[in-house]
Length: 142
Image (cartoon, rainbow, N blue to C red; front, side, top):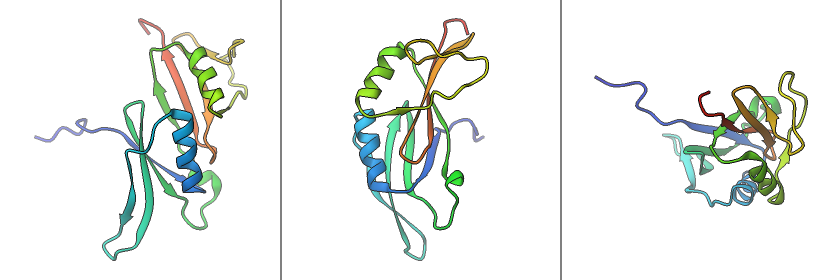
């Protein structure tokens, strides 16, 4: 019997400028792509792509589809961690990350830029195409 949960999550993110996005992900996360190559159709049409592993998940960057609205390109992701978030946010800021500190009702932001919840704390950053990336640390017992 096949187990439908025996799978790993991969995310596909459509980006406006593949090379700029590869450079951003490399700089901000301190990692080179696991893979750079092409995805080809049966007819041989090739699409350039790159893959990073972030938080145990493969994130595939592909060029945005022609004519698609910018809002149609966005996919959110959450990176779960046990490490303290304030030092992590400072490190990402030093690497050029930009953060989304817009108001989220019920989750006030502390002096370090970390949103506080009852069961977890988190912050958001945005990549060059506006994809929101969340770093989240759950509290023990949550």
